[in-house]
View 1 (tube, rainbow, N blue to C red):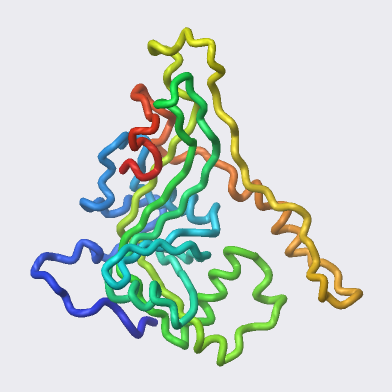
View 2: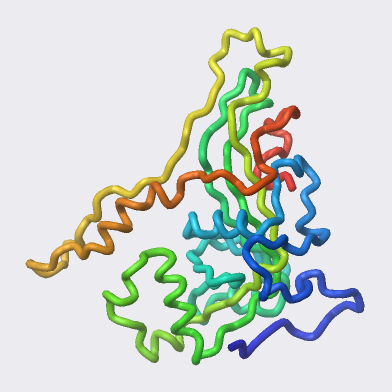
Length: 275
C-alpha cells in the first residue's frame, strides 16, 4: 500500500517515468522500451527482458540511487530487495535523497564487475560487467506494509536474519522510510569475453592481453568483540558466507549479450554507462 507519490505534473508532456502497468506480465516478458532505456551504443550487448534484469538484481545486494536534490545530482549507495516487479530501498526518514525521490523521477543502477579487460592498447582496455538501470518515481510504503518491505530487503541481503534477530521496534519503524520502485522502465547491459583487438593492427604486439577475473567472496564471519561467550555462529550466516561467490557468479543471459562483438570497446564510453 502506498501513501505518497509524485507531486503535481510540472509539464504538459506525458511523464516518461510512468509507463503502462506491466505488473501482471511473467518474468519472460519484455520491458517497456522508452527513450531513456533504449540502448544506443552496442545494443547487441543489451536486453530488455525481465529475466535478465531480475538475474542481475538478485545476484547483487547494493545499488546506487540517483536523484536530483536541491538542484544538484546526488548518487547514494544503498542496499535493496526485490519482490516480483518491485524494488525496495530503505533509509532514514530524515534522508534528503529519499524525501526527494518520492517526488521526482529517479534512476537506480546495479553493477557487477566480472573482470578487468587488459588489451594491447590502452584505448581498448575495459571491464567485463553486468549492469541494470531502472527509472521511475519512488513511492513511499505505508506503515502497514513497511515491515513486509523491510523483510524483503533483509532476506535479500542476509537470508534468514529476519527470523533470527530482534525485529524493528515501532520507534525504529517511524525513523525508517521505504521506497517502492516499479520495475517497468529498465534495461540491462552485459559485457564479457577477452579484448577484441587481437585481429586488429595491435594484434602482433608483444604486450600481454587477456582478462583478470574479478569475483566477490565472503571471508569467514568475524564475531563482535562484545559478543557474550557461548553464542555460536548460526547456520544461516555460514550459508550466506559460503554461498556469496556462487550467488554473484555470472550466468548465461537469455539473449542478446554474447560477448564483445566486432567493434572495439575501450575508454571511449563503451562501459556500463555507454547506453
